[in-house]
Length: 213
Image (tube, rainbow, N blue to C red; front, side, top):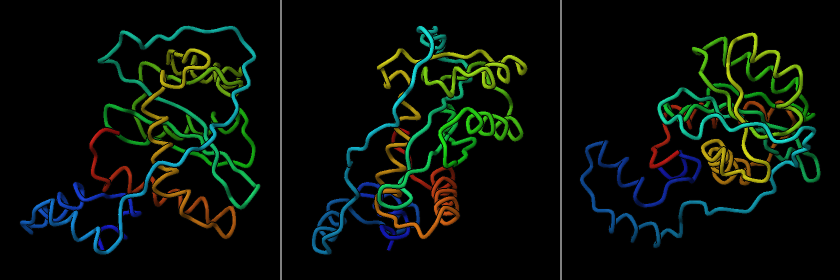
């Protein structure tokens, strides 16, 4: 099933698009009717708690508000549940212009080292951006991260404290990852979580039909 092979993420509009791209002429209403008969549907949003942001500094500037054409890397950290009551941390860098997750790292601790490793991974494979945008969390305002960005002459832009929508594109990606993948997956161990998350991100980058993110 197209539905099964795409993390059960597609509703009838995207399934119709996949079929038409394959040369199968079918109406979206028919797909909707068949999905209802089979009692399948795209996964709905489920609320999740964003990792707490510990802020050590006063507000720093948002440099990208009036930079619609600039190359920007969006960065954020979110929780992934390894097993009930045990959490690990996903650090991601997303570039909205190309709709791609450029780099990610998963760690057992939410610390600056995780962010540094993610930035270095992105720099190894991609041209550096003009701006790196994140929240004001202590991992992102750490000396290690600031020094790395300064060395590569990348300007650091910050979301306003308490305004996650300032970093909407990567917040949207993490929301999709949780809804389409993490919430419906049981992991056997840390390595299994890393492999499966990598597979999802690869699918997201290359195969997922986009309407926004």
